[in-house]
Image (cartoon, rainbow, N blue to C red):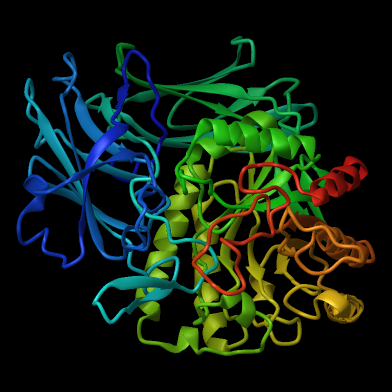
Amino acid sequence: MENSLLYPCNNRYRDSRLLDGLWQFQFDPTAKGKAQHWEKGLPQPLKVPVPGSFSELFTKEQQRDYVGDFWYETNFFVPRGWEQTTLWVRFGSLTQRATVYCNGVELTTHEGGFLPVIAALSSVIRLNQENKLVVQLNNELNETSLPCGTQKILPSGRKIAKPYFDFFNYAGIQRSVWLLSLPQVAIQDYSVTFQREEENALVNFDVQTTDSNSVQVRLLDAQGKLVAAAHGKQGTLRVPHAHWWQVRNAYLYQIVIQLKTETGEILDEYSDRIGIRTVEISGTKILLNGKPIYLKGFGKHEDFAILGKTFNWSVAKRDFELMKWSNANCFRTSHYPHAEEWYQFADEEGFLIIDEVPAVGMMRSTHNYVAAGSGKYTHFFETPTVPQLKANHLQQINEMIVRDKNHPSVIAWSLFNEPETTSAYAKEYFTEIFTKARQYDPQKRPLTGALEKNSQPDKCQCFPLLDFICLNRYYGWYISGGADIEEAEQLFQQEMEKWKALNLNVPIVFTEFGADTLPSEHKLPSSMWSQEYQCKYLKMNFHVFDNYDFVQGELVWCFADFQTAEAIMRVNGNRKGVFTRERQPKDAAFMLKQRWETK
């Protein structure tokens, strides 16, 4: 069950209690906690909220920029009536790596900061008395886990992060924590795939359980009416006159899975909401339910003032309202899987998601936004640590797909962002990554990855692996910006002609293009950092896009301003947002709204 990433579901057979709230917290800069048995209780704790990003909570840079071990602790009771069930703890994520203890006993370890961590509690739990849950975390960056980076030791001995990526290295227990009560024999997981049969749909299912008891699967429509049923762990539901899940016009069915004895006694039940839809690539088109779609929207970070990367329903609601207002239909989870609730919201609203694993920073540069496009080569995939990195990369891809595979909103998996792709070493690395990733997804969604400027069509060795090509390009900002924007457009056209000459017959989607903009700056004539220049820059890019019919999407970088490490090219973070960090529109938002109304 540790591999079961099913989102908590409450019914007659399953129960859950949130453990969110104020937890005990302690930094451990000398990594002495384990030797001193902090798993049995923290000696000098502070109180912090869970979920939360600790860097946003304090007023001193030593705490904001802290790198190393840190610990969380809370106490809980097992509710009455749970004695005959199996007990679990489920973390939405633990960033970046963690060891989980209960009552002083180690339960599990996990590498990777953006996917769920599940641990069995039954063998260590104390009924009718208080239990102590302790988590040791570490947020150090290296080249063997994702995202990649390093750290620096200051003269004082204090560590600071040096990420190879351009977003703040927020860490902590940043998503909700559940105490779960599940049946002794239980449903572990399920998968669905879809086929069209004229106006009908076939829903193929595969259910995994902890034993060999029988399974019944039912499908209910939006009004709760039964439309199909079948028995067995594998089978097909035939849905007459199916309602297809459409872009910005979502229709969700409810799937109900029951685990039964031979006499018909129900042992477990799990229900979920699914959308019936198909996704495929046909030539230069991206097809949803057999019809072409054009992706328009944003690269998107989980980032908000005070919250950091903490999920918050109010922020999510505001973000989806802004995306609907702008006439967008898609976003990329840049550069890591987001909290599960984002996908649930997208399922309901009919938004498309390119789901991205945190394979970012695969280039040795702490200012990668400058290095991307400079031609710099850092021999990233030629080091002895590559096998360990690859194992972590594959693990996180597998966990991402296991978690998100049944969301209709997820139309593609992005397996990297801006790595070095110009060497045979990179080709060998990513060939294995893509080969194995294709085996993980029952729906066989398209696989892609975002290529930076150094990955030119005549140099990149990895783009043939992609089902559709994603390009991150900053002509007019990092390359020939400001007064040179006329030259930038010419250089951009020249590159696009190279892609066109390859006759690849696949779609190209622009997953990043943008210009830093301060909402306070207005200039006539326009100049860099002004709102007028951001609009001018975007119009230039659109002019290039519209010249090529194989361009099938534009995801602006980025949805909203977000926090980064300090740098002379960053004014309190990355300011390329179409919206401010407070979610107010810049002038570019109105221009996008008008373009996307008819695009």
